[in-house]
Image (cartoon, rainbow, N blue to C red):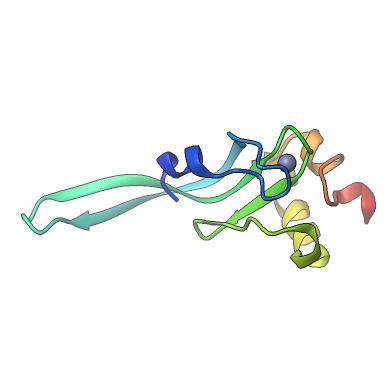
Length: 105
Ligand SMILES: [Zn+2]
């Protein structure tokens, strides 16, 4: 995901934006334009978007932000994600985030 995209992402629950970004890993991406020019940019491959209004967090997996309403989220998968990356994320997400956090395990 490119950084500019963050400006248009809003919380699906309350439409709050901008969301707070926590980057877990980034990748250099490379492409060649039609003119033969090589361009490089950084993509966030893993991270979390956090809504400060409702305290919900949304995972970014393989460069794709997963912005689902609560009823479509997979609690087990979400908790696995949080456990795996808990050292990179603040307590407000890991322990107090919505719709669930590691305190709900
Ligand atoms: Zn929200």
